[in-house]
Length: 408
View 1: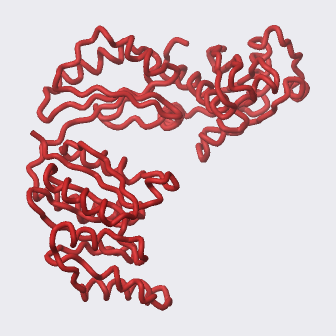
View 2 (view 1 turned 180 degrees about the horizontal axis):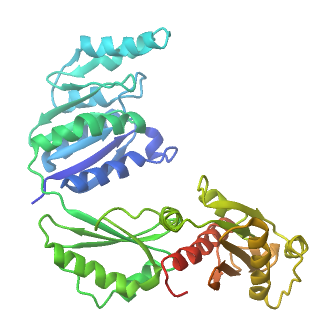
View 3 (view 1 turned 180 degrees about the vertical axis):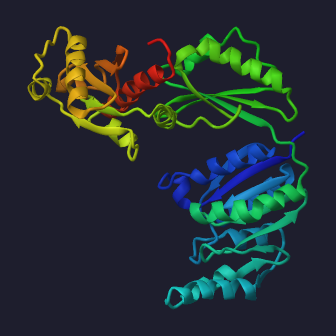
């Protein structure tokens, strides 16, 4: 059985929602990849008694705990004091930690406030975790069955300390058998549809199946235990991909990571040495923003007015046949830009509909390539930002499907 790990975040700003706890999510990913079983994420505010109670509970039920936050110089930073009281330890002044804190300020030609001296007070017997990226040293200790590592809450500092100091210590201390996480990335299909499509596939009991609906894709996650047969793993993934069809744009973890939709498109565009020009309406410049820095994107144009687009490209606008209008604009745009591909996105629906979360718009996407036109039509609903984002993604997905030679 994998060792049990808990993640504990300290700070009033986390429990009140002022700060999103990205540390816990990142640490969980790292721990699972190493071979731990993560059972809990817990957040506690700036309350000494609650911190003490939680530390004692974790010490009884977990093999390891990674704690973030509460190591700063102010009165609401209570972690070191809570650890000392929870486990019956004295706080001791650490000369080396103090010298490191002072050097941090000296290097920046700033006087060190006296309150920073507090950060050098560590529980007796704790092992200091040197912090070259900030003023707060971390520390670790073993109490009962549980090995604790206490890290600063600043994400930049925390990640450096975990990767360079804590991760190697965990690998030495625990006999870890890391599993393998495979993520199937899809677009244009929801979680419930995915689950329905793969319902007939038998998922072995030892394989964990999960779903994650993000802003730009929906991910189907399969966590395989250590030593799971490679051929059976590949077969299961292949069966799922077959059921999900052309909605799948990438797979992470089976071989190399595929990355997000734009990363997949970038790899395909550069491999084929293709260039693109794009016309945006509903996505309002977001398509260009998602492709920022891509050398194959020669240019994009956003215009919310169909009449303005028609005048710009000398194309008659037929609101009863927007697909034909989009094709004519694509021809003119490709010729004007001198690009290999032209991608045009139009939509049916006035401004009132576009702003109304309860009323959908209909997207008409056309991609012009050397072998002709490729097109798609989708209905998109929801708040204006969702409509904008989906418009950008669905237009880009038309490009991706063509590059991967899939049917539209």
